[in-house]
Amino acid sequence: MIGAGDSLFSAPIVVFKGDYMITEVCLYLRNWFNRFQPRFYGQFRIKDGVLISLHDRDMGIQDNQYYRIIGSVFNDGVYKKGSEELIDEEWDGAVWLMAVPKDVEQLAADIKEWQVKYGGSSSENMSPFQSESFGGYSYSKGSGGSGGSSSSSVPTWQAVFADRLARYKKL
Image 1: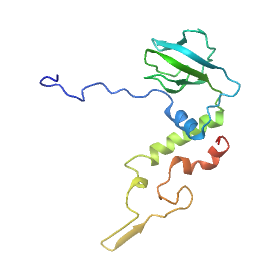
Image 2 (image 1 turned 180 degrees about the horizontal axis):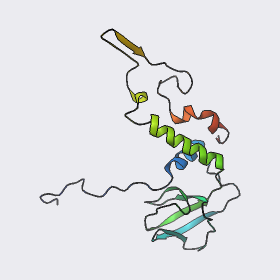
Image 3 (image 1 turned 60 degrees about the vertical axis):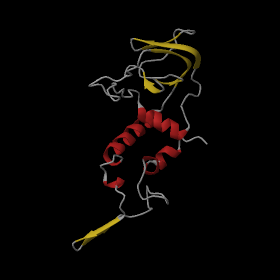
Image 4 (image 1 turned 90 degrees about the vertical axis):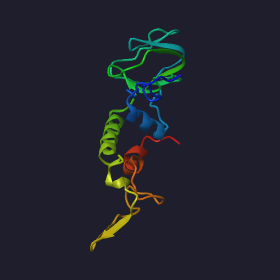
């Protein structure tokens, strides 16, 4: 029961600490860059921010190596060893080691920068209006073209970076 001064929305907000853009890029590409990399399945624990396998103990994750956590309640996603902020938990699932190429890492950084600049709700790209006119002034946004799509003139990072992404996309 909620008492006086309590709120349904007073719970702390948990911000995802993984490398969300690498996760998004890998999801879009359907490529986890784990060819010839070990995959571990079973029970895992994160304690004081340290990931361990309860079966294999040392998974051999190298400093600055990316890895994917699967099946976790709080930590699903892609992380880079040494820069991750993991939430303590135990789960049954998987951890896949990854070999992300440097140019994909740079591509994800470029996409993240583009998203900050053009992908937010305050961006003019997100305006629902194709054209406006008032007081003798008018303008129209272009439709289609590079970065656009037939259903919308608002470019997405997938369209803007399509040429650079295509090389890594799996069917």
